[in-house]
Amino acid sequence: MNMDDSTAPSTTIPVQLGDIDPRAALPASSRVYLLLNTKLLEDWAYRPSPPDAGVASASAPSVVELIRAVESFAPRRWLWANGPLSDMEERGPLLVEATGKPALLEQAVSQWSDANGVIIIGTEVDLDTLHRHLGSLVHITLPDHSQATFNFQPTLLEPWLSALSLQHRAQWLGPIQQLLWRTHWYHRVSWYRLDRPEAGSTENQEALHLHPIEMAAFNTNTQDYFVISLAEEVQAIPHCNTFSLEQLCESVRQGIQEAADVNIERDTDVHDYVLLRARHPDPMGTEQAKAILEDPVESAAGRLRNLTALIGEKEFS
Image (cartoon, rainbow, N blue to C red; front, side):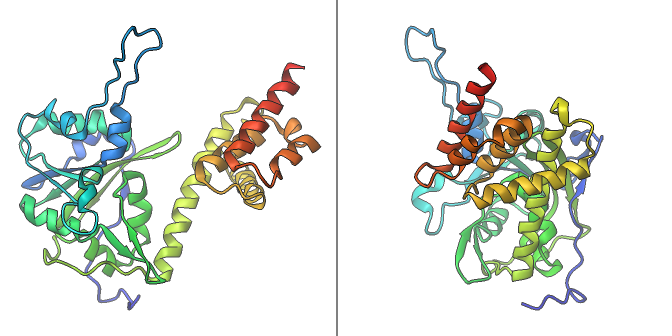
């Protein structure tokens, strides 16, 4: 791939809405669609049985049932319907026609965005054309030529689009003219939109092949979001609120490195480790805590549970 963007099609980058009501930023194109993340929405909609329920009364609506509860007829297409993931198509993203359906758009903005489960798309093309284009984006070729599945999670969209070269961003967007979505990085929530003066090609593309520079930029972008959001959580701890965000970001980076040194690498586990470290600096500095962290047999999540129990014992005593 040629990383010289001097002749690449001009595309804008995502911008943060700030205090603007996202309803005022809905696409103004002739057609509007919702791209729904099935797993995240179904997890959000699940309601377990109350502890005192006499009979099982759990509620687990499917993403299609969630749509039908708002709009009885909304044309839709599964993105995994064609290709190697077709046997699991109903676990993948769902594209829904929302043109002229204000109740569906309101549900997307006010409810489904809370679940990190919706991307709102503006375009001039019909449902089948957009479906073909988005289907061509399901598989991404990584710099080492391996294949990855792109899950269209809204929170990852801004760091993804910002990492792509202009040429690859234009390829990825294709006929899309406007995007609106909400990001969630733990307690850090923001609305973003992207606007393009002109749509790109609607022709089917080969799988996008990431350049190493793009892969590195994407990893850096997501790491920066993670650090800032975690630093803001640390800043909310009473004994940490006198430190600046910059100071806490540096502390969080040190915590992430400490976690990596003891093979704690999943974001959720790193998040829990850094908060334990910030909330309980004294117990976390003991030899007992060190021994738990360096346990060669226990999983990362198990070690964090054991650390939490140790801290509880020390505070109780």
